[in-house]
Length: 320
Ligand SMILES: Cc1cc2nc3c(=O)[nH]c(=O)nc-3n(C[C@H](O)[C@H](O)[C@H](O)COP(=O)(O)OP(=O)(O)OC[C@H]3O[C@@H](n4cnc5c(N)ncnc54)[C@H](O)[C@@H]3O)c2cc1C
Image (cartoon, rainbow, N blue to C red):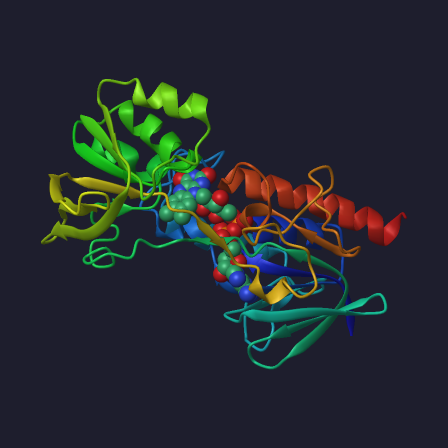
């Protein structure tokens, strides 16, 4: 069978697209490795519109329930779905490649399966680049975090560190300065990648400190973060800072490897899209959410972008 559409990814973008695809009665296959996306690890999400607060796990459950209420069922499993629906769901499996033959796309999975479709929507998001330093893995979510807007308020009146000298690092620092006792930004090189206006504005705050040319050696703490040890790369001197929170902003790694042989990516691996329609440079493939080269990445934005893509895919299939 050749589907109208294959959606890849089960975060907010993919889930939103799946619900819209089903309601538009497109013959759709939805494939995801996991449900919920990146913020599934968050204890509380306060800005998912229409919900005052919910955990990342609740968000993932809600996505699955909403998609399954519009789906025929899960491929290869007994599952409660909606008989007669045009949406089929394949969960727990990764897509490993996409290719194009004439006007039909072939999507392959790690299980060796192949699915065909007239159009593809990629919503595979991204993963945070992880801090590689002693203790960093062990203390993740125990004071070491990758999201200031989610976890920042838990560190009110405490001393914290931000690692990273790009816009994300400085914007995280700006948020944290609103309620933390002090914020120290540690950056690995001699110059910041963030724009000058943001840097100047953030560094002006009396609660803010910044140290350049730094190598992070160790995150210290027993059950929770208690400090961080870094080396000054110019002098070789090591310093230990007592802090309760560490916010890591050293970049994202888009989950786009499987598409790179077909779909043009930017210099950091994000899928290049036309923000008007979410089209990629390959006719028949759209992308939305954190795997794309848009400026801001949030749950609501990912869902909205995917809905825009779906509207355009529908017109492409039915009216153009
Ligand atoms: C710790 C953390 C907390 C956050 N908290 C908030 C918050 O409070 N509020 C907010 O608005 N934003 C928050 N964000 C940002 C938000 O999570 C992202 O902007 C959003 O998840 C992007 O959605 P997405 O659907 O584009 O991609 P993702 O959420 O990254 O989802 C990608 C999906 O694709 C699947 N996938 C990946 N590769 C493959 C593959 N090869 N084959 C099949 N499936 C694949 C994944 O399993 C996943 O289901 C947070 C981010 C992080 C890291």
